[in-house]
Image 1 (cartoon, rainbow, N blue to C red):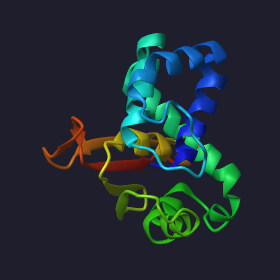
Image 2: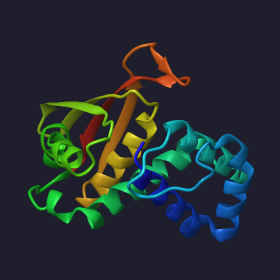
Image 3: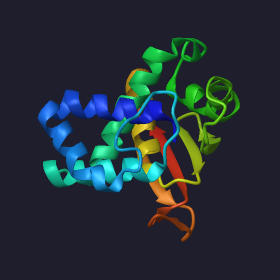
Length: 187
């Protein structure tokens, strides 16, 4: 997993919860972090390390893991906009942006980060106000994708409901490998 994800996560934790909580999270997690929590934006790390960090933060803050991961997804979407504004200039709403994730955004990301193992997204519209996104990944981060969808909707100023459901009983680290998001725009 790209180190940029880790550096953004640590920045979010410091901003939202303070340096003391961030330090405590790292200190308690160290025995389970092969990298010893030394992350660079261009490095690659096991996805299991972020699971360890989020689980520890959940214990420290008493906030559910899924809520923390969704919040991080929203934060990460905003950071992607700051880091890669050119990818956002060709879209006028969240649905058109989300429809371009697989064929445009991920192509650009892969050119910047050739070692990135990106999830796949397949989209289709049920109507002008309903978009369906099918998510597949080798890592259990559907909740992160859910948060990024929420961040996208917020960025474009759209009010919508996002409902997610597992596509099968196949599990990765105890979480569904495939997920379907149904996004209903309330205009």
